[in-house]
Image 1: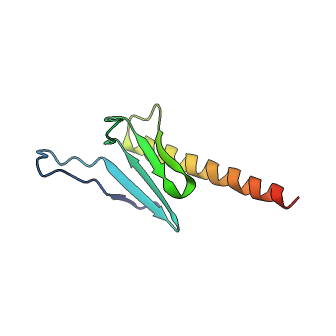
Image 2: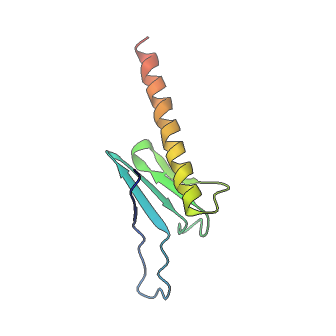
Length: 91
């Protein structure tokens, strides 16, 4: 079961405190999605620093749900690719 946590930070002057940033922690992997990135305001991006995925634009995502689903799919794909690379080392 996924447990995303709101990790949005707000400035003191923010009149509306609308959550824009959420993190999922699964073991040693943190996945963060945000629509409040300084360079991509209103667009969803993701970070997964342990996999060197920094500020990856989640194109065509228009909702938090889509951003969460796509970011998990991207992390899973990256992990599968890394596992395949490791398997090739042993051959």
